[in-house]
Length: 332
Image 1 (tube, helix red, strand yellow):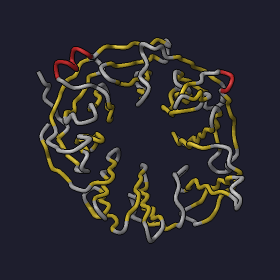
Image 2 (image 1 turned 30 degrees about the vertical axis):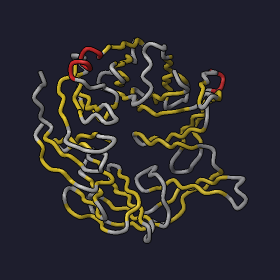
Image 3 (image 1 turned 90 degrees about the vertical axis):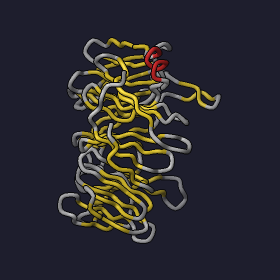
């Protein structure tokens, strides 16, 4: 890959739809200054850039119009114009959730908290709390349905203590089902419409790849890459395959530990720790296609990889963002 530029002091970047980069005290949108100030946190979705500041509250900016909405609250966006907020009552016995319309600057609904971990996908709002999964109406806060996984008894051990089953990771929607990881070995699919369980797969010790589960809706598979192995689960057949990558890992002296981003058959990965190498794995051939060394000093060598805008963005441990052309020449 050819290096285009290196940007210093980058705290956040998102390149899925537009190029949004928080660099020092400024936020850039497609290379133009969008906001400057005492920034604490930046998040984005397809439409908005959400900027939390130290002295001016939260500023929400519409990418298309540059319209700004200032609120003294901060939380995830759960619809086109609503934030999900939470606070405890005076004696900290009850937590209250409420939705805030940041365009009208008005409260939409208020409920006693019954869920956490919100997940918004294709206009559907989900939430979970321990073993329970909820689908929620974002306009009213009412539960449309809920599913309790407690009876599955898929507990796991953490810090030498047994932990009951919980919803750990949302994966995505496919053919009317929400897929998520539960406990330490389950992938479950639930009907968005009814809340009924439609799919269940349990990991075996041999094929466990716990993190970074991705959903390919075109191929109907869930996949992930781990240290020297690639895992793929077919949602139609409920069959999983695990491919060893040890030969390629030894050849290129890199473990396929960290999944950055993916597109089509290509996964952008890095090893982690002090290894400055990153690469591209081909899901079709099950081979490492490309490896490149990042010129960095420090630990970790690489913190994150994303792609977009026909570029590949690699953030190193010193918060320097290395921007490459996406075109690659296969490594021999």
